[in-house]
Length: 370
Image 1 (cartoon, rainbow, N blue to C red):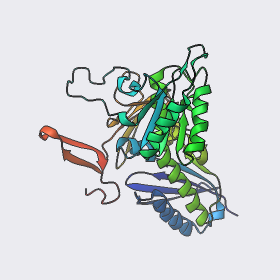
Image 2: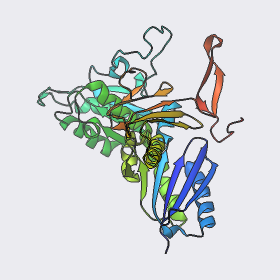
Image 3: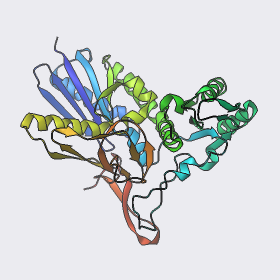
Image 4: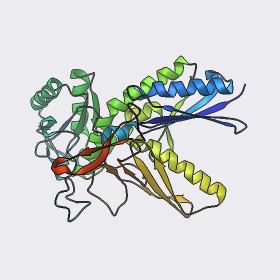
């Protein structure tokens, strides 16, 4: 029986399906994406490719998936309604940020709005000391009140980030247990689990980004896995990570901050492979999509990496020389610059008659017109 591996790249406009057998023979299919359910477009491409190669779903030994669903949700502000629970006095950490600007002398530049609006950022009385000791016990009654408000607001996801919880996660764990009992249908992200590191803003921002995209990514990946099974593909579903590696789909759904640059990272790794095959050591990879355009530098045969990234504000970037333009995500990632202007980006007139492009895209419906 022939063994075949499948690679799937889903963008906002087009979906690409690649099948490769043991002999290295490749079949490529490009179909329009299906924004209402991206897995439908993948299945269209998969069925067509399987028929063309004369293989069945059980012949597929691995499906490796690159996707821009997480980054597009942030760039187009289409993530889930998210709440934040934090220590009393730290409600506005997301607003303060680092007080850095990517355009130092541009007085009209505005920082992107927090992914959690202020009315959904809740404070609870508690305090962990810098050495991990409990200074103020968690106020159970206050917690019940803020959770009640968030449930009334019908949030789909809740981020929990308490001061110094990286030293002692006791109070965050208590909140997690309470939410599991009182709000079992809500996705909960604890900063002490996701990023147990010092620095309140970075930890809060990373946790909020994960909470914001998690319902979207989880719903998509679970639906995709079911669709694959419907055509007889029961092999492992792996998802490209932002650092150039792969991870099981279940883990990607739990921690989608690791797949924000999934699709772009796959393109860079492909460019790196081709560079190695041809003996080139220094080049720039460029990936033009329908919603975004991406670029990365490969120098001396290596892709530069960073442990921090900024996403949003029309520009995703990890370069240490340009900070302050987006939502901080502290995860290992390839140093890719991504701008929210692709082949299907929509031009529009902003206040004052200024012409702008994107980040909204015509995607696959109605699709690009040029």
